[in-house]
Structure formats: C-alpha cells, structure tokens
Image (cartoon, rainbow, N blue to C red; front, side, top):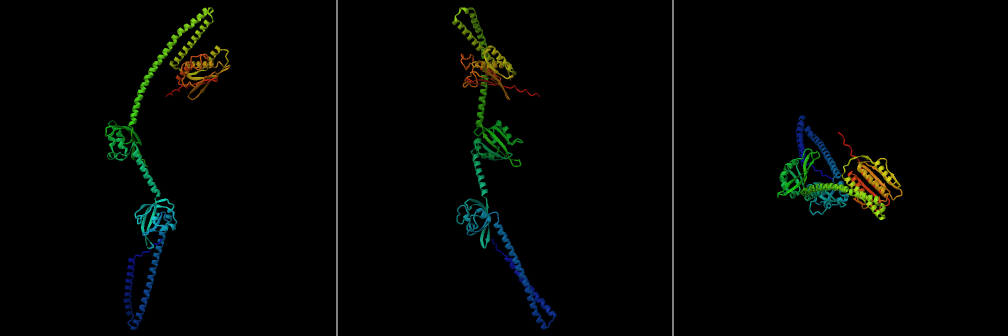
Length: 581
C-alpha cells in the first residue's frame, strides 16, 4: 500500500531563511575583512586592482564549494527520508496483507473496495479479483439503502455474507486513510459469528429458564449469604404467600413474618445454615394475608465459588399442604386400622382358645359313648354270634368299622388341635430313628407287602421332636398307604441343606393325584381319593402343614396321577448364638 511523503513546510521555510541570512552575513564580513587586508598589504593602485579581481574569484570559489556541500548534504538527507518512508510503507503493507484479522480499504465516496488482505479473502471465500470488484454493500447479508453506512465509525456488529452463502457476523472497526490521493477508510472485520451464536444461545437459555421459573408452582429464591438482600424470587411467590414478589425484594423479612407463631422460633434459626452444612430441609406453616394456613417445605443450599466461599444462598419453597393433609389422614386411618386389627386379633385368639377347648372337650365326650358302642358290639358278637344270621353279623361289622373310623377322626382332630396350641420345644433332632421305627411298625402290620425304603443314615433338623414325630407318621403312613396298589412300592426320603435351613422330602411311586386345584394352603377334610379307594379323614396333611408353619417353614406338595407323590418340608436352621461381650 502506497503512503504519501508529507514534508513539514514550515520547518523547511525557516531553514531556507537561516541559510540566506548566513550567506548575507558571511558575504558582508568577507568584503569588509578582505578590503582591510588588501589595503594593509599595499596601497599601490595596481596591487589594489589585481587584489580586488582575485578576491572576487576566491569568494566565488568558496561560495561555490559551500553551495555544493549544502546541496549534497540536503540531497543525502532527502534520500534518507525517502528510504525510511519506503521501508515504513513496506512494513505497513506487510502488516496489512498478513494481519490475522480480515481487513480492506474502501473508497469513502463510492464504497468500492480498493485493497484487501489475505485474511479477508480466506474468511469470505472470494478471489482477489472478485473482492476488488465489489463494494461494501455487496458483502451485506441484506440490502443496504443508498447512503446508509454499513460500517459506522464506532465499533459495530454487522451481518455479512460469504461467497458460499453462509452468514458471517463481523465486528467492524475503521479509521480514515488516504490511498494514492484518494480519501478512504481502512476497515478491520473481526469474525464474531461463534461469539454471537453463543450469546444468542445463552439469551435463549435465559429466556427458557425464566419461562420455566414462571411456570413452576414452587417458589425459587436467591438471597445474599447474610440473607439481608433478596437477589431473585420467582412469580410463584404471589400464589403461595399471597403477596407480590416486589414486596419480598423490598422487605427480605417478609417471608419470616408470614411464618406461623408456633413455628417462628424454629424457622428463625434457618436464616443461617449450620456450620459445615451445605443444605437444609425444613417444614413449617405460614399464615397468608387472608388468614389461611399453608404447609411449606423449604429446601435451601449454599452456592459457592471456586474457592469454596459462599457467595449466595438459594432455595425452593414448595406447598405441601395437600401432602400433609393426606399423611395426617393416612396416619389417622392407620391408627384406627391398627386398633381394629388388635381388637380382631384378640377376639380371634379368644375364639381359637375356645374352639380348641371345645374340640378337646367334644372329642373326649365323643370317645366315651363311642367306646361304649364298640364294646357293646363286640360283646354282642361274643354272646350271640352263633344265633345271628349273616346279615346281622354284617350289621355288627358295619357298626365296628364306623366306630373305628369315628375314633380315627376324633384322634386326628385332637392332633390338629394340639399342633396349633402346644408350646414348641425346639432342638436339633435326628429324625432317622423315628423313620425306621415307623417303617418297622408298618411292616409288622403288613408283612407280605414288598416295599423298598431308601433313607439316609442321619436326618437332622431343628424342630420340636414330638410334633415332628406326628409329621413323619402322617407322611410315611400316606406314602405306605397310597403305594399299596404297586407290586413293588418305593418310598424315598432325602435331605437337602442350604444356608438358611434344611429340606426333607418324602417321595413314593403310589397312585398320585391331581394337585392343580389345591393352592398353597390345605383345607381340613380335603380328600384326594374316595373313602372306598383309600381310608382317611382328610386331616393328616393339614396337621403337617400347621406344624411346619409353626416352625416358620414351608410345605410343598407335588403329585401326578399314576406316577406318585412328593411332599417336601423346609425348616429354618437354629438361630446363631448371641456373641458374648
């Protein structure tokens, strides 16, 4: 870029006057001194004429040498100035062309672009000839009106358009220059597209955040660390507290004045968080201007800077009146239900006691006449058997058989009653001897049956020995009874131990039955076969289940018709002994 050389005219004129004045003084002194010297040498007229002639020549020679010196020195200084100006212009041109920011020089009158640097070509995507053929208005994203300055003198942000059509937001700085005698402006265009986009995103986020605050039912607030000044409060304050947010901004203690008198002392301490605490949650009541009460859940937290210093305290005040009322109603209902359950439990316990007492009494009272009936039928058989015909003897057999079934039913009822009332005396018991003794009894009753029994040598469980004996008798008797139709019956006992307890399983290959409609709990007198097929009262498995449940265990029944039955019971291990201090 060319830069004009502007000489300081006032200084040049003063220097010229000084040179002219010096020449006049030196000439006057030369004449005066040289005349005096010539006359001092001789007053001869011939000498004076010759001396005057040569004196003029000497003066001309000396002034010529002085002028040559002055002109030579002046030209050297002028060349030095021109050289410095050229180097300065070169540095300016190099700085302009290689500046990292886009720059151009535009004609002040026509707005045509006169010079452009490499950064502008790269930023806008134009070739040099294309850029220099444009005006500043061609760079604008929208049409510019005639005479409208696109780049004002003060820094401004304008929207330009790149060659590929993409937008470019530029911050313009410019100053007046002169280029080849033409008034122009040098423009620097800083690309702030990303900065403006970020600012727009932040502003949009702030608008969304403000809209979110305005739509929330909770009150959002921010105060100074000493709670002496309210920095922000959301519009929900008017809905919850019944007062305008501006009132709280003017009087920071307004929220505390609204607290119910019974809660005021406790809430006043919340003005400052406890030492070392970053957050605190509290619930209290407020009294609105219309006299209504509202429950508030106040959640506040410290806002710290990078150094850990508390700079603000923010929080959320939420209306929990409905929740508190619901909780109070639930607590009242729970209290009434607990009282009702306790009352019904006591009534049920009393009814169970009375029912068990009645069962024992009824069973005892029934066994006396039943024993009389059995005894009388046997006595009648002994005394009159030879005089009775076959039908009459059949009647006696029916009486004795019905009496035995009735006795068995009464005994099972007594066992069921005892299973629910007797106190548990738990210990670690080996059930293997009980199993062997029961199978020995059954083999004595039916010595001709072929039954294969498999059982481990030890079957240890933590249980009540007497009640578990009743369980084993029922399970083994059922397996023996229901496997009778098999030519070779098989009864298998097994034990599986886990971390929490032991599982005892009694499996047989008997007739089995359908278990689809049984469910988890067995019902008294529930039978899976007819009395003609297998005799029984329907109370054995119910008694076993009650005993297992009293031990805190589980009884599982699995059976399939024609395949067999598997009964498993699980009992928990003995509790670990308490550690001694």
